[in-house]
Image 1 (spheres, rainbow, N blue to C red):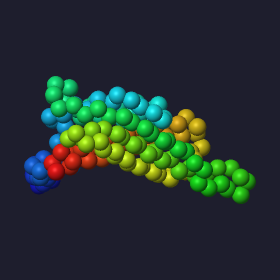
Image 2: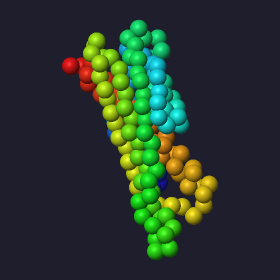
Image 3: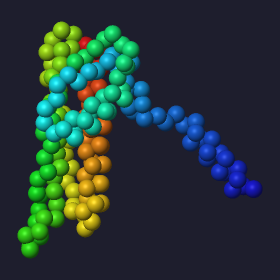
Length: 153
């Protein structure tokens, strides 16, 4: 009986603790972002565009036209004594060009991670795709934060 009461109190406490994601309300509610030109890594550009689309208000008259230029790199970090690659560095640099409040702005964001090679090539490929998605999500968060900060000034 005591275990049930403790469990219920714990559930109620966690449910009402007020936790919410930092980026939950980080949305351009009164703005629409349109990617008009893209250069660089096609897959990275596509992921970033999809992320931006989720947080953009399609009905807004306040429009930001963006140019995206991404540079995605997969570089060898270390090799074992046999010369077999064991670690990679994955990195992306995303450069956005836009006009904010009538002034041209260049916003640039970088993401980087070091990873170990997995024994299964399919798992490795899936892992790298997940990292790219995480990079795109992080870059979107930084982009929206930067646009909101510039608009507040």
